[in-house]
Length: 101
Image 1 (cartoon, one colour):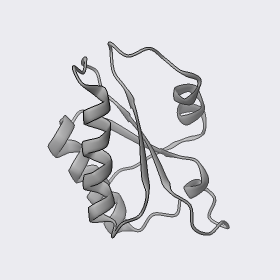
Image 2 (cartoon, helix red, strand yellow):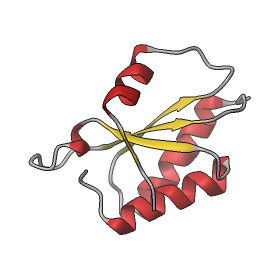
Image 3 (cartoon, one colour):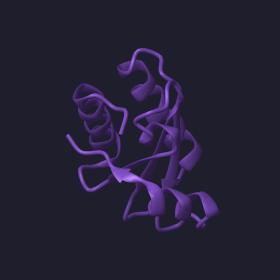
Image 4 (cartoon, helix red, strand yellow):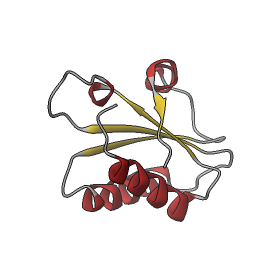
């Protein structure tokens, strides 16, 4: 996992502040490859409650994390009880790693 302890802590803190401490965050995609370079940060955020405005929520989390990580591009995929499952959710769960502080 190519995230520093500071980056992991920042992601965890921001998601907890915006979506609650029960939110689960998985890192997936190119940042899992320790031998790769660059790349954006792909996050799956899993919630056990419905969201009324998922696009705004994803954008808000993405911008906050991007600012904390000095402009690094952040992609946020949300999973909530009222959102349909997409193939990206399965891919992220199968290959992702939990981001914890």
